[in-house]
Image (cartoon, rainbow, N blue to C red; front, top):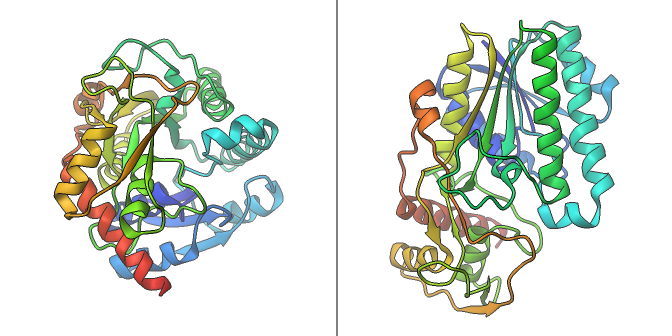
Length: 336
C-alpha cells in the first residue's frame, strides 16, 4: 500500500514515516520545508534502511501538487501539512486560513480527481476550546478559540460534508493532545526556531543552556499545584496511531474521529519534576501571568481509539522526558 504523507518532514510526520516504513507501507513525502528540515527525512531513511521519494512542494501550488499524483500510484494520504503556531495564528490569521484551508482544498480536490479516497487527517484537541468537562470525549462540544484551531475545525467540517456527499470515502480524523518526546535513537525530534511554543522543547532548551529559565504561565489555576494540567503523549505512540488508522481503513469505508492521548493529566510542575528525575538536570523557572485562552485542565478520553483501533499509548512520562533530552543533546552536539 502506497501512502502519500504531506508534511512528512515535520515533527509528527517524520516519526510517522518511520512507523509506516517499519509496518511495511511504501511512502511518498511532500513538504515545503519552511518549518522542517530535510535532515529529518535522511535520518528516517537511515533508521529504516529504506528509500522513498521526497517532493519539495507547497500544497498551495495545485499544479505542482498534481505532479505527485501523475507520477505515483497512491492508495491513501496522511495529511499533516499545516502551519501550527497558535500564537502566530492570532497575529496572522489570513496566513493560516490560506495555508491550512486552501492547501487542504487543493489536496482533497486532487484526491477526488485521481480516485484516492482514503485519508487520515491530522487534527488537534484545540477544536475543543476551553471545555470544562474532562476527560474529553469525541462528542464534546467543539468551540475553538484561535485561528489555528479554527482552521482544523473548518477542515473537519469540510471532510464531514465530503463524506456525506460521497460515501465511498474512508476518512479518519485524529485529534492529538500534547505530543512530546522523540525517537529513541535521538536522530529525529522536534525542531524549534526561536522561542518554543510548547513546554517540552522549552524545558530541554533551558536544560542544555540555550535559555536562562522556563516561564510558567500562571500558578493560580484550580489544580493541585496551581499550574495547568495537560495530556502529554509520546510522539512515537502518536505515530503508531496513524498506522493503526490505516490498518482499519484498508477494508472499511466511513468517517471516523478519535482522540489520541494517554487519558492522564500532568501539571507543568510535575513535568519539570519528572524531567529533573529522568535527566539529573535542574530546571530553573519563573512564574508569569496566565496566557489568554489557556484552560486549567485538559486531557483525553482515548477509550474509543482503544476499542476501534486497538491503539493505546505505551510510553510513560519518564520515557518522554528521557527521549526528548537525548534528542536535544544530539541536536546541540551536531551544531558544535
